[in-house]
Image (cartoon, rainbow, N blue to C red; front, side):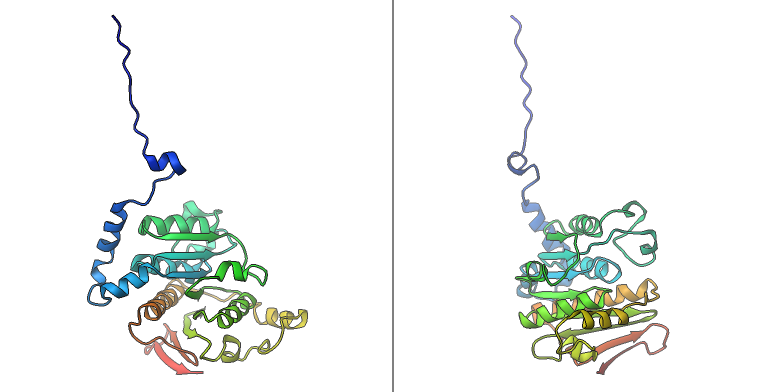
Length: 271
């Protein structure tokens, strides 16, 4: 008699539920192996604080790509990333999340995939949109830290105001040519607008004030690869200092500035 052969195909339970693998115990093992070389710099409790933290990074370009990669590699547990742009060929000289295959693709989409390939444990919310007064609460709520990787002055003002009002540390970073700067702004420090003496300080963002701000933001600054990546790395470590209590953050009105074209490139000045 002919006997029918039955072939069993194993389908993981996680696939049946959601079509994607559930978090694996291997991810936990990988996580602790990944951060093993940080022992002696961060203790276990400090590392757990990083693992349980939620940081929002606004911008996935030159500065943002470096910030995000460093945070993922150091073991931050949750990230929110925001950027409305798509990768272009002119990004290749400095934006480490870009490559020739990513040209034309959303920066948030590419960045999320890259970060998850580095740190499989990381949880990422990606917003492929521009941050503004209407969505700032939705995007920044429940963040422990907000990191400024922006090239847009108006958005920077909106974010810095919201962060100050809601008691979220705001880590500012900016570049121009061979120069960069980094500082941390909180409710106990001068505001971003006060620190840099912007015309919007103490004013509602009316059409006139917004127009004046936009005039200050007309120039597209020159940039060379090391500069935004150094700024991003410095901002990432400022975040680590705030979350873990390790070291001393660079608090406004103190600002770390550098000019890579100079022999004595780095200094901290009081604005």
